[in-house]
Length: 400
View 1 (cartoon, rainbow, N blue to C red):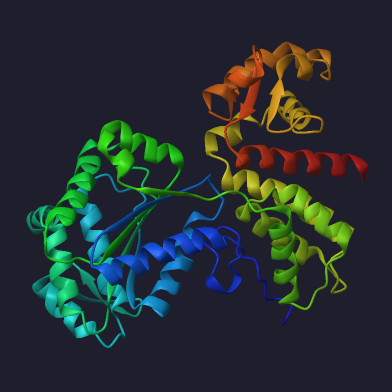
View 2: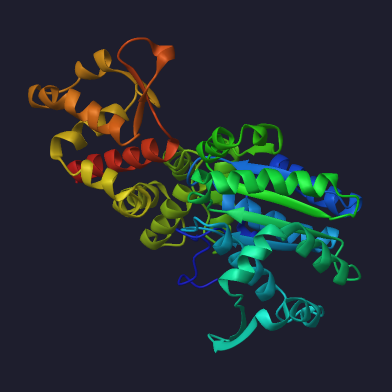
């Protein structure tokens, strides 16, 4: 393939072509979708994992697999910025309508939505779901009956329905949404008419905990599927497979570096791989390409993946020096203040407690009860690994 082509997709969910690993999680989700289609009963799951670990990519991959192998209609809806049930319903039905475009059953979906289908003629998409607010409120109330009626119309083409609610940050703090979810599952489960629905929520574990705190009964509703970071073998396999798509062999030392700094997070692996590919000049990814890729990715990762308030907080030169120290071996995701302070310069020691307080306030680090007094741990892998990239960039700059 030409050099202009990159198999890496930093910043966006990965396509099915480049999906790596997760066989256990894929199998569990596919089983739930297939079970819903076969039994005509609701199946529910919460797909949890840290930021950047590939939750959306996994959900998208499973949707395609369920459509292909189980005759399941998949609707993957991103709900970023949504805080009301009415807007949630509008986005779900709009996504469902757009998924039908070009399908043999498109006319059935349009007939089902009736007067709420609007002709828009923008960007090659000629329809959108345009129900008024009063109708949306009714659709929220009659969500299950509406889905049941839709699937009855599509029973010759589709055996089941997979609904993915992704990016639920705003809804996860809504008691109205939490109660609606519980009522939806109860209503479907206690109604004799079949509804072959697999409902998957995608989010951080904190979002699930938030929903449970608002509606405790949700604790027993969802099957929890938690995504772990890639293993070293999976990480190395991802880089080998990706570079092979552009006919670029990868040296073992380069793979060591990629695995070390990606830390099993797909979001970082894509940023580093893309940067290393741009650095390569001879069609072979060696140690120099890998180190340069890590250095180039550091600032990109900081600006793109860290929250603006965290990124601004670490602009201080002394704070950055402390961060570089705390992510350098022997430290890892956990560290103790007493061990850290011994390796700091005098001016850095003066601001250490302010640094720790600021990082705690931003939830970058948290007290670690298992480590005793003065022990901390990083709140998530993304922060820790982002700072490791920055530390390597700084070291490489000094070495030049």
